[in-house]
Image (spheres, rainbow, N blue to C red):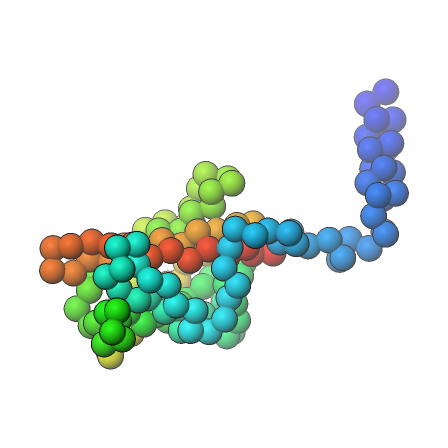
Amino acid sequence: MIQRVLLLSFLGMIACSDGDPSDQRLCDGETRGDTYVDGLSKGSAAGTYQLALESTEVEGQAKAPDRGMNVWSLRLADPAGAPIDDAQLVLRSWMPDHGHGTSPNNLSAAPQDQGRYQVGPFDIFMGGLWEFTFTIGRGGTKDTAKFAFCVEG
């Protein structure tokens, strides 16, 4: 009986699609994330900073955030665009639909120069919506900036 139910369910799934599973993408219809472009910029929650995601690499290849080991290059500036070199940036990655983060989950960004920072490597190990919240600490104050991306499975 169970085998018959499973077979009928499988046949029903095939009948409801055009038979080509490559046409069905995990992120189709997902509206909660950002659209990735090099230089995507976000203002912090309190308006203290501008954080730009200048570029990303996955497994050593320049590409949008994706499954695998990610390294991101960021630029931190004040609202007028002046670079900030002396902040502490900590990334917390989180998958809200699944209730877990990456490994490691809280990762400090390394300062470079002229407001640039690098964070990673961190492993985006599964597809779905991911939120990446940066806590920015400087001079005794903290603020946050968040990016969100849907990653194909």
